[in-house]
Image (cartoon, rainbow, N blue to C red; front, top):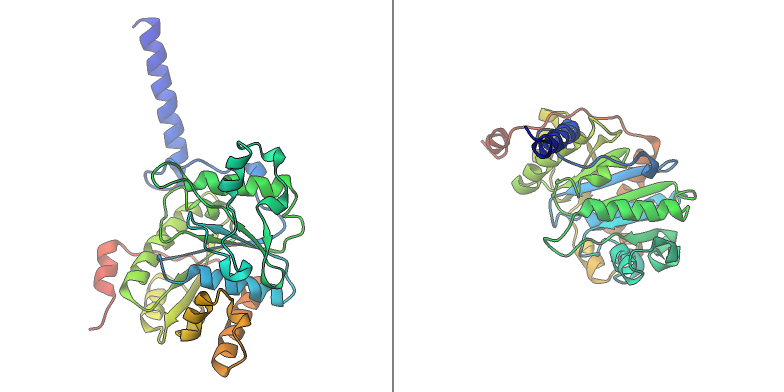
Length: 309
């Protein structure tokens, strides 16, 4: 074996060793591990996941307001290239972290907090991480850059609660990266097959991340559903817990069209009931929820499990 061949072999072995080390995150994982200096300290951090279109942004924004109503300093981070997580709080589509970084050629020292953070309703601080153009990059990089900016500008020093609102039911390394920062992950689900099926896969992703990070399952927020029987049945089978039930209400749809949170939608009995459920949920999460050790089902098993006999 000549020196060149020996060098190539050593290089391949080093790459293989690194890949195997990174796979500790779960079967087949080659995810990049969190830089310890980028940990969020001091604040309670929650990551909100769920099937695309299930109402994560509505849930996150109203939960952020609820936390602010009980006296907490709140930061909401939207993790979706559509950058529409916070518009009911800010009444606009705010610039994304990626947008402002591109303008300064990624020289973070040229940015000020007001370049990428906007104060929303009732003092909730809002950031849209954004994302790379479709098919061109990794969402994990975007989340990492956002947390880096927050640390550099000491914006987490005066924050009690951080809420990551995460894109759809994507659980690849990039969009699972908020789990590296979160203390609790909560899943938003409706009482239907598709959202519970997606929730099952999210539970599996959270379980994988919990091997190397402090994140644990906090529970399920039932949303857009009159009943919760299928969610409750699934929870009982795998070891999950329902934290809240946001009733199916047309006021929720109207709040999005009015670019407003539900706390700005009036004081009818139906709206007040939803507001009170968010306030109760904020109190529960702030007090601390047990770490749930749920065991997700195999895809074929959950296919057979869900439904009516």
